[in-house]
Amino acid sequence: MNNPSGEDSHLATYLVNPDRTSDVRQIRAALDAAVTTNARPMSLGLGLLYALLTGMHALLQQYPVRAPMIVIALGSSLGLLSLHLFLRRRPIAPRWGNWVGASMVLVVLVNSLAHLALAEDIKLTSNISILLIGIGAYFLRRRWFIGLSAMSLTGWWLVITGLPPQEDTVHYIVWQVESVLVATVLFLTRSHLIARLARLHLQDERQKAELVDATRVAEQNRQAAEAASRAKSAFLANMSHEMRTPLTAILGYNDLLQLQIRDNPQLVSDVQQIRQAGMHLLALIDDVLDLSKI
Image: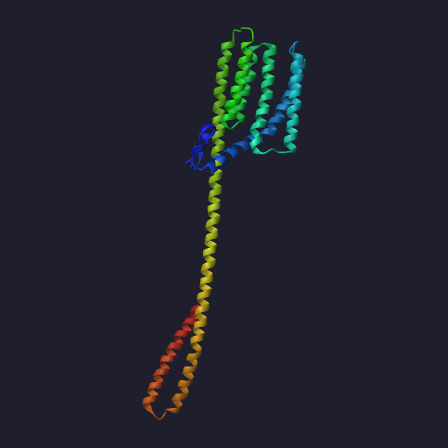
């Protein structure tokens, strides 16, 4: 028995039979497809956001933050918009959706950490918090959520440990913990919901397949019954005709025989009994013929 485990063990609870690895595979594919569907609008939104941030950095930032942040934001904008155009022209397979999402997370992380390190302002931790929540809202597979969240938190921690001591550090550490909790709730809610929808879809497909099979079997049985009925009718009709032909001859010879033995009452009585029996049998054959026509 193959029980799902590890990163996708939570998916098994949504299956009709958790031991069916084919169902687990289809659930995973549904999760990956949902992530892939969001890749194109996400790349467009982030590309436009960093185009806006490029202008804001040019207007609001001071030396030495301005120049590097303009370069990083502009490069991020161009890269993300190029990614959007690529995805628009050449849709990718669902298995690549998480990789594309991870690349976008990396772009956002580089911008956020660079800004935090250059400005040396712990308040910019809010960018990492937003990124963590975005990871929880975007990804649906456990390993991607945990891996990217851990990478973001590790990068943030390495940067803030190099910053000058600031009074609000503990406050922003707690803030990050809260952000991780919110991201986890989002991740679990979305992944469980989509997994459940995928499971319902699988059940619906199975029921449709069972209905098609049942309809096909019923049609085969109907055709077989009709064929058997036609064979029965043909058999009865042929047998009745085969029996009627010699019986008609017997009755005809019986009439001739009665004309020849009119002077012998005993023989006439016997021949009449034969005729009565023949007529009775002929009536039965006619009934069989009528029955074969129904």
